[in-house]
Image (tube, rainbow, N blue to C red):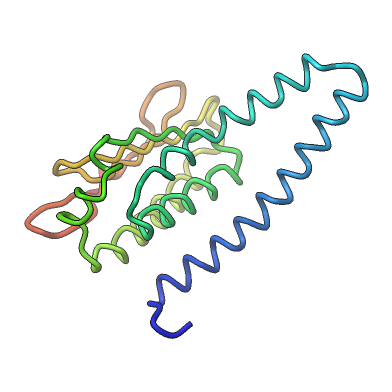
Length: 176
């Protein structure tokens, strides 16, 4: 792929893998729904569909980010967490849904930093969530000094968190 950075090629490969997995899962979900309907359990089919839609809110929020590399990095992060069975919640500052913010803020060198940050967070979360009763990963994206804060919660208590901050025109990690 001439003209594409190494990160862009990596993200494309990851997105294709995620697409294949989600397509497989999607077809399985349809079969479950059809099974409920064939057994005359329309209420169970409806509940199953509602749970599925509710589980996609994190991906839907990330899809509102117009900066493609950021969206691809965060979407991949969320899908990896969901593959592990973790619940994910995304809080997105409304300014992040507008191109104007990204044109004034985003720099190409931030891409590798954000990608590395999400990979480090993924490893830390996978190491810590086992044994938790109700693990939830919370992603907060903002326009201030803290650009992204990722937290692992158990029963609404923070077990682990790490931030990616914007300071002095640099994007950097702040471990907490």
